[in-house]
Image (cartoon, rainbow, N blue to C red; front, top):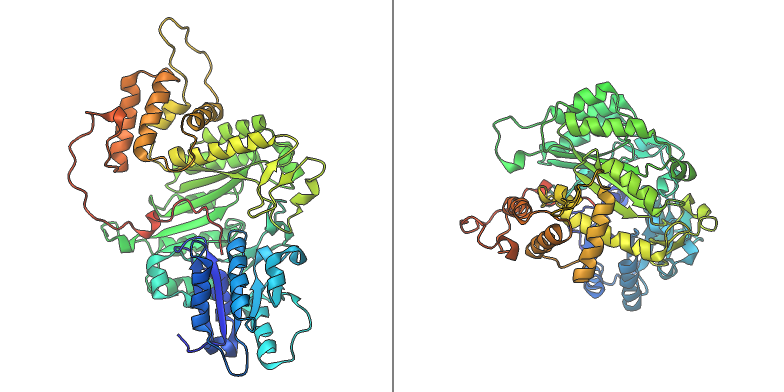
Length: 538
């Protein structure tokens, strides 16, 4: 640590496990100012005063030039960062505060956080931040508060991967990128503002990845919007990781390799499939944004997607590869009804991806989705994350109802804790004695929505439900509401509960649990501690 630094780069990450790629780009490209620059990360859970106190310890008063603090501002940390800035400026108004990041790159004049700051860099900040710091330190002082970031050629940038520390490699998720930008124009995404996608020189990029690997990195999360856009590049990158898989007899968790990509669902040619099929289980995770299967909605938001190809590719990935599939759907898109969303959910569920992440539309600042506000009755929350509250197609009560559905789906389905029980919950109801059998399979969406409504009415909770309480609630619902025989429901729940490793005593499983040895302390590998990658990238 330099003592004292003239410049501090900081942000508030969603969780400790996240390491800011953006800040490391800025640090790597500080040039002659790098020896005078420190990087310090916090989490949004830290009290604002504690963050301010630590920052002030880093930048004690300097005799001549005020110190500079640069904040990375995102949709998930803008409220907390605003609170930090209020306290920081009250304590040390002489400190020059520079803001950057997607949350302050649009609608800049409308935000309290930008009024508190001295300068705001919009857009690309890789080189513009250092340039502004030089002007503040040495002159001439900039005349404008809001400064448009300059987009350099990618080969002009110093790559940031050497800035990941040994502690980062051991304990945190490493974000990397082989390209920037996106050629697609989905209006809910900031990438809709990009003109195209730009790729880093592949040999240079792979050399950096090799450096990380040699230093001990074993988890890589690619932030590229379209990893499989250019198949030659995709195959080369996959081959790089395939060549570094541990030997079949390796047992150390430190040798486990985990790589996450975001892929375009309808672009999976045979050459790429052949490469994917060579990876064993537990190495590849693909994030697949379906968002909506409704063709009218897709066209309305400028989303190009061949649904038939996307469906066929997902089916192949599930049946013929070992990749873990994390798929996404968005509720509340303009003109999407509950019924059409349910049809899309059922279509996706039928493919059996490992996770279906359910999100509610957010109005990111600067995105073209706002052009539909009046025509489609879009009403958004005024506060981050600017979630849609109602539309012309779904009222506010339905949006709230879906929000509960999504939280319960995470608990039961995406958690993987109820693999045996979930098919019962979503399957055909067993006929009661003397009742005619049903002839049609129910909608999985409707089946889970019915359960979600019942669970909310029964508990009034969407958080704080223990594994034991969930087992008991599921047993009651399956037997009393869905008509499953008690032994069938209990057998599925018992298998799931034992497999989960939980060690309580659910009422529904009284007398059924096997004798268990005392728990042994263990540390989960990093790849098992990542959760579902719900937090945004920074």
